[in-house]
Length: 95
Image (tube, rainbow, N blue to C red; front, side, top):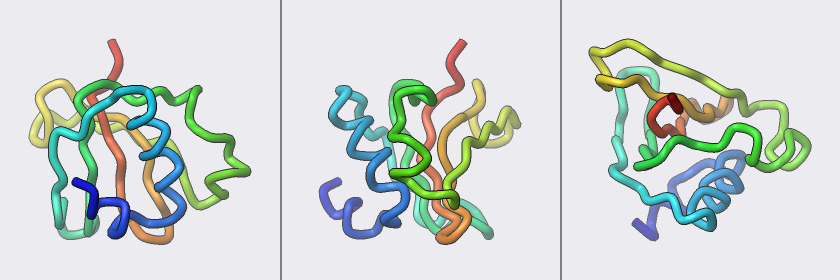
């Protein structure tokens, strides 16, 4: 999984590093993750929206995204997306 850091867009890397530092684990990496997403990192635990680095640190091109469509994940996924790279960092939706 260490090569993920090389593939992940620079605007999502601080969020990835924050989740790893919190003890969250990568379940899988989908590459591609659909026709519009070249790479998605899926974590075991829900991502902490409020504990992510400040928007100034990650830039204006990163936004929070939720997908509750059960065709993709039974419980839905929530996380961060990059407008520039179209990459995602997801975890299950916090309940």
